[in-house]
Length: 181
Image (cartoon, rainbow, N blue to C red; front, side, top):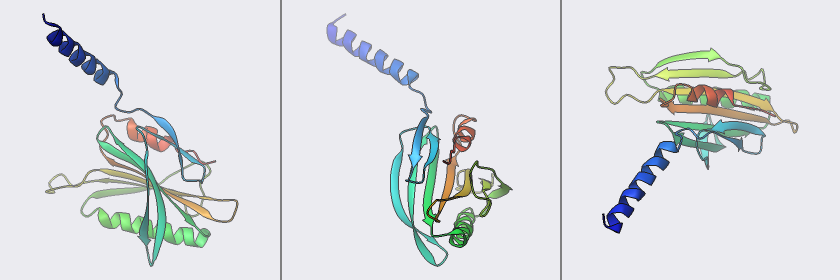
């Protein structure tokens, strides 16, 4: 066999072996903003900032997330000046999210995150698109929670899994990894 043919077969075999060995979910600890929250993400994190309309206000939100295994895993963070503003912003954030879900089947449940504030209380939302709906959106899981900071501000968070991860344990791993300082 000529060298170029043997070499190209070796390269193709090596590439296939490397692809087979690379995990879909390569979990890593990622700090979120400067608030101290740590989360496990299944891939290298991308970061962005944007203004999010929450009620009558436009709020600066830091986002950290990535896509792996057919889903997007993300954490959004904003800093409220105090508990009243935090409560109002989380209500607006929740309402905005619900408004985007259209005809999806939605289940909301109280949630628990260690060291999160009791007010506003952590809240979990799970939404499934209706099966018969043309152009149905992807399933979404959202967890809102907050933590009081030493300076009197309140860190607000929205943890989201958008889509159906290829591993049934991926969403659980993501949500259970949330660690507040």
